Length: 200
Image (cartoon, rainbow, N blue to C red; front, side):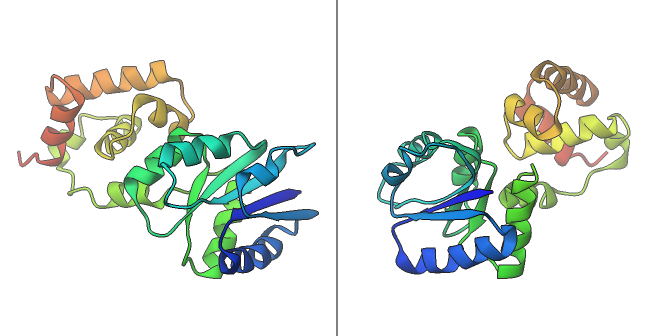
């Protein structure tokens, strides 16, 4: 396994390198201060951890990271931020790792991503923070439709929902139409509002 850690901060590299070694036992770990140092690699990395300067435009940072050949990519973030997590997800990253994460949890997160999972905790927090559902309306939805609705409530697009659930975009569109019909809504926003504010 080959891992690349990109950070201009010496102290951040000093924390991440032993963490990666403990978690993944890679054959090689490359530490770089910027993405340019990784551009001429002969073989792709299994994991790219990117801690990019906040002074750069976010989309430029993420697009630049996409240019480094890697099977999995994670963004190191200072704080959980839904907009930043959504942008990372849209650019094909498999997760965000908050900088102050407890080492044991960070190791578990790295293992999860390398094994093919994703880690976007802010998406989960939105779902968990949703108001309680009311049984009469909930009974109108299948469990999968409910999953789709919760992700709609989190602001995810059809493409993002499809990727998360491992189904096609066409299947998600069918679920969305079924949800709109079940709750009597004309669009996604109205469906979410009616469902999560339902008192009947």
